[in-house]
Length: 532
Image (cartoon, rainbow, N blue to C red; front, side, top):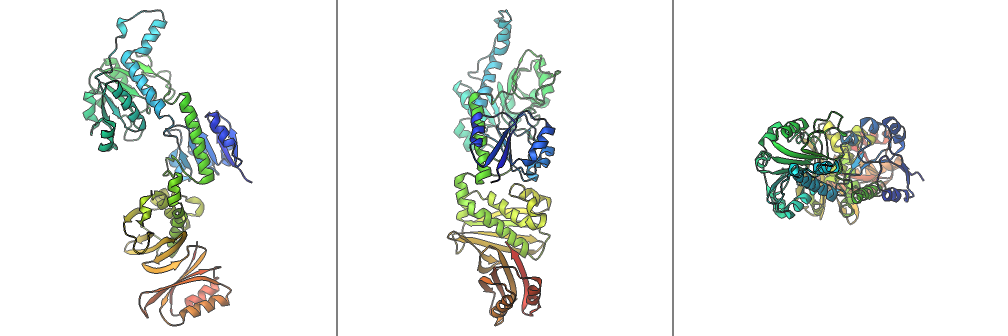
């Protein structure tokens, strides 16, 4: 039996490594501290790569990773992983967003206390033999206002601790619902500039994006209340470090505590290193025994589930699927891909502009985004190649081709409990197919609005013909003469004597001579062979 090779390139919990090694389907290689060239030698044979923050999973590494399916990051940030390159190559990138929540929140609060009471400076002075009580007069947290920038899990945990110390908490987060802010008992601030003049303390908990880079720059630091104290345990780059240095030197910012930096480790000439009113720690937010144990076990379990069960958890470039969700939508993933494949082979045009997936009925109760990805994957296989498209990169591949993908929903699925309908369009032209389940059996139920019943499997012969007597017998005889057996048949017509649609599930594909004879019949308007 071929085994999945898993490279653990950074130290993680031994329990996590042992959990992987105990699985007979895995070959686990624990090799840390690899330089890029050494990593390039070993990565082509690996199905999974597990890292923390040390190993850089860049585009060059990903291009060499011919067998790679999963990158597991034991931690929250994926700054060291080229997620865009991974997505383009169909590699799932997973992290552990919950494993170090408490650890990081506690560290942020520790820095909050440290910068308020100058604890590190007082320790260094006393340890050096001095007794400088007046020099290290701090401020209380009680009654002060804390502005938390980013109210995700860590920001929310910090808010609880701050309120326990009697602080007023302002929250700035463009994605935080008002109802959630009320539940957290924080004051939601719509504009960041409005929060800064009122804050005695600021704590950063935003992801680093183009929008948030240097969100505390010279202009915004000038808006802050004189004497403000700032903590950053989130991402280096959220604060303009040179602007912060100037504000600390002038005293406008009374103190700052940083656990993260724009360049890690900071260079020897780091502008903030020698200032007396700053506290620096070497990215320790997740550095507790409990957090390290948790993220190592969590990422090992996630990698195992992805490789063996197809269950995706905490993917940063793919919606997460837990076992319960997978049980609901799992049958639709393969079915959706088949419907997409069917439509790509039957649409009368190739330069598709839009693809609409309509969900009706009970399927709407689940997260349908993985189904959409499966549909797009199936639809694009013929255009870009089966090996070049998968559920991870399907939407990116669609954008590359100028194909707009839409989801629509309706409550009533008509005669069925639920239905999945896919429509492709180019200009004014459209083509569609819809399907549902009869019990556990998937069936195609409409093609271009015409009612049929066909199995989405194997070889399908799709005929559009004039509705004249004897057509079914004629086609059956012709196929039989050439050794092609009909498994099932479905007929539909728009009106007596009008146009008829015949859908035949075949045991084998007809050859070119057979298709030529079918096309030669004057009553045949169109004939297509679909392979699913």
